[in-house]
Image (cartoon, rainbow, N blue to C red; front, side, top):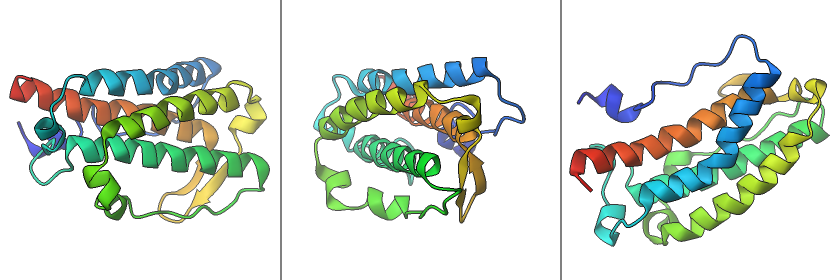
Length: 176
């Protein structure tokens, strides 16, 4: 298996050119379902398996779980800022450094799984009531440029599936 497939088991994210209400509903379901999918992906893993990198040079399963919580929490806050401020510039963070902090390397993954469950329920509650005009609000990301909320929704629907696939692909390759 090549490195590209190991890094992007469901393919790279491609921003939609046009977004419909049906697209948003599908992505919102993906956000809603992501915590359960990630929980299922790690169910029954041993401590040693949690500390196995999903690919050579990649994060461990434990780091991936904590990264998803970190990333989705940041996205939730950024979306709230976009809904309450006029096109804010958001602050990026160094996800690689965050993944190498002690909690991400050693804390039980269940902590972040619990956080994701609560966070995603709150996130879905926020997003479920947005108007078409609110979906077009957005923010400026210094590394990615202007981001509309409906594009961010698509990105994070992909992001949850992307990292869950890192774990399920590893399990398949290892016969876990």
